[in-house]
Image 1: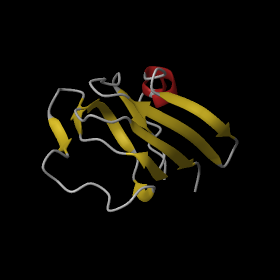
Image 2: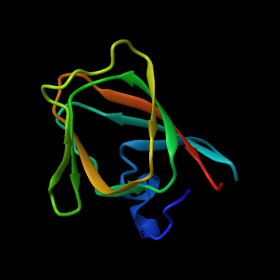
Image 3: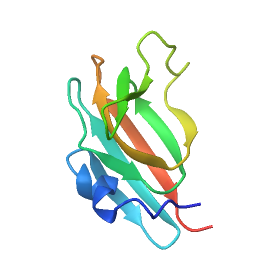
Image 4: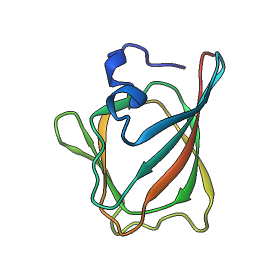
Length: 115
């Protein structure tokens, strides 16, 4: 499932290129490396495909929608039991992400294109 109705200019690699780097892309998958340093906030962006996300390093984060409303705040919640950790992520609509922790957020995202 893909949510290609979000504007293409909000794609993570275009809109938040300071934090997202393409490692591999073909007609089946796109593999991204994402790194967000402490105190940094990504530009507003989307992830139009579901993905397997491997967390290499973790920090607390706040995700906000395009209006600034908090969608997720991990402060006070338990992080991964051990690293690396892999999770499933559905497509994500327009959002920003702020690293409010002391470590880098560093993940590898394998987006599944098509059906």
